[in-house]
Length: 81
Image (cartoon, rainbow, N blue to C red; front, side, top):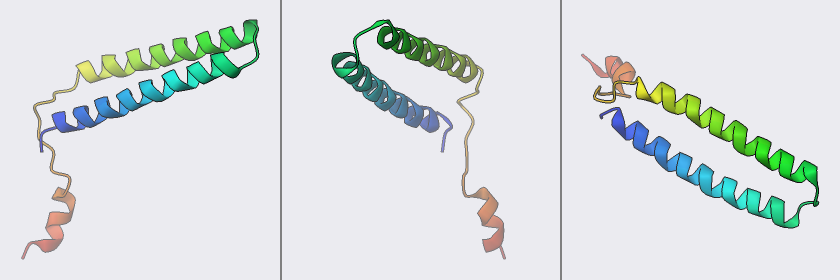
């Protein structure tokens, strides 16, 4: 199993995160209390999310995605005769 499959799973999870974050921010801004703290906490959430995503992307750039992964290899020793 190529390691790139894990990247695809991660991208799907990040897409779900973006959709849920967008819906959360819409509800928060629509039904939240109006004021500077609402917009400030929304901006803080967006900034922290962007910084964390940036760190993760920087890490993922350095990974060799052509390697293969065998998740069952530790268990195969039990079945060898």
